[in-house]
Image (cartoon, one colour):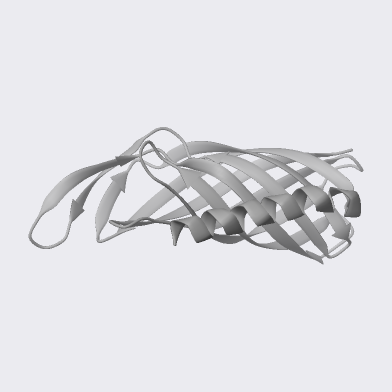
Amino acid sequence: MKNIKQAFFAVILMASASSQALVSDQYVSVSIGKTDYSIDPGILVYPSQTGIRVTVGGHFNKYSAIESSYTNFGSRAQGTITNGFQSGMIEFGIHGFELVFVGVLPLTDKLDLRAKLGIMHWMDENVSGGDQTYGFEFKYSVSDQFDINFEHRIYQFIDEFVTIQADNSMLGVKYHF
């Protein structure tokens, strides 16, 4: 299953690279924000981690875009897992590359609501995987070249022992070239 996910991710990246000729209104974005974690089986993770995302993207048309990002969710998070009979410490520091398809709904001439759906190839010290991400973004155009955006995404990092859900909120700046 892991090889299938990696192959799927490689195909998507190749398609993304070849689609660069099809996109217009290309941009780069830098965002900073926080991530809250919940882990199955039950866990308490504290405190929220501060992370950063660097994104490049482009629009196919007024209503759709594609983005490729590197996201680092911050320093290593720690928490305690309890499953009724046992408890133990867990520590992780997830980062990775993602490819996201974006649906754009213009609300006004300066404000857009964007729906995002994609896949992330994530890594920690000893494990990695490819899992889904989804979320939304509000983008406000300050000028023809600069935007301010607020984004919230949900990630699920699944390995053979644990499933981590990360709720990630970021504030960023986009530059169109």
